[in-house]
Image (cartoon, rainbow over all chains, first blue to last red; front, side, top):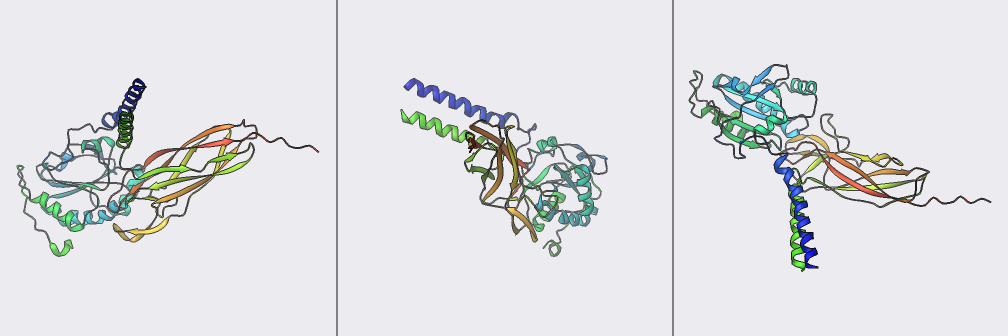
Length: 196
Length: 165
């Protein structure tokens, strides 16, 4: 009787390991990127944009980057997009670059159509699972990384936050001291009246 | 004697919960027992539960870009599934877009379908496998479309002999 219990127990443990193991093997992002991304170097990627052009993160070297992962099926993402458009326009002369990465099941054409309809005035890239993996496995949308002019992540925000918080994070990324000489690196000030 | 078995059971349950991919936003609860005679049609009701704090799009979301909730069933060849019927979604607005209404399910919802057994079907119990595809959000964030498995059994009765006068 006792022997049967232990055999049963052993069997249960084996089944448990079989259930748990795929979580660590199959879905583990292929990156050393940790969940607490602050201070880490933003991983380089090369993706096509909605116009078919290849875009690298390093193309924006010397600029502060707001890297926003979104999808067409994500209503909170849709809420944020006009805020990013305003941000891109307001801080472009001070060296801010907004970049959208679509992590989507929709076709490339539908993503492009969505971007046109939303009047997205910043690069919209067609994301891949590997891109998500590079950034620690983007499990929920929207997810936004704020990257300073030196390519270091200053903030990592999951989910929708207020327009004010988005602007504060972008300004923080712009104001972070950089090792890269950038003639346009004027310290921007948060225009509080517009941020509300 | 009972203690090791209990520990093993708890360990197994913890492993099953931990092995789920992503948040446990939707679960398959149950399906009504289906008993059908060959050549006849019965109905199954499948019950799902959306976790607290989550909502998923209804089968007819109000925006074409949103992912509709869908049940896909793969019955054995002699069982036909038709008329999959979804409940109407609740029309709600959320803090992320207060001016827009979405058609969603939250809490418990039921999907029904007609189940027909072929005329020549032998008596027995047959399992129908399937999955529920959905895309879940909270008030602040959304999760990629996901499928969860589900199943129910169809008991096919013995064919009744027709009486001859």
